[in-house]
Length: 206
Image 1 (cartoon, helix red, strand yellow):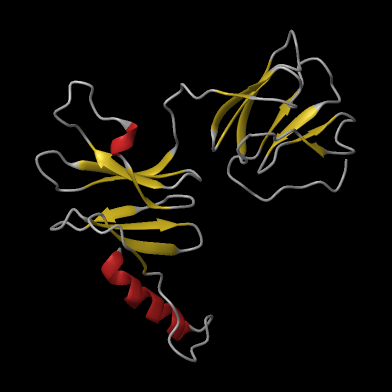
Image 2 (cartoon, one colour):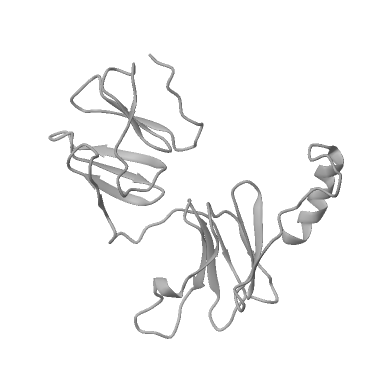
């Protein structure tokens, strides 16, 4: 119907308005809507709201009322997307991967979250209130993916994020060292030798 397209994200979905047959929503980095059957598309309001929209629910009795779920959580609008209420009381997140360490007396749990950093925190503690959000630390930013903890030193955490970036994080000092494999001097980034060099450089950190 038009030349509109979005980048091929795994969360791309379309949602049809339950009343208006010409109105369709496209979940993408910044959600879009068409009111003419797909001929033209416009961005949905994004005031004080996180990007990367995944899911949507539209109220069939009042289509200006809808919920959007994405990287930043769940948002509700009653005016067609001009304003949103963030559901801050929902303790939810989306983890790509989870890892644990060998710390004592309680091991720590680490995870890389969708577009909201990589975290680590205690599995339990001695408090009657249990573990709180304040006990978790950020080990790396961006989209958090794999995390690995030194099996003999739980203070050393290896974290990665998009585009192949990886860091060595020291919990004691807070130091982060970039350990992304790099081409050798004068080495062609696309050469087979570069690929071998990158794999060999990356091996100790995997």
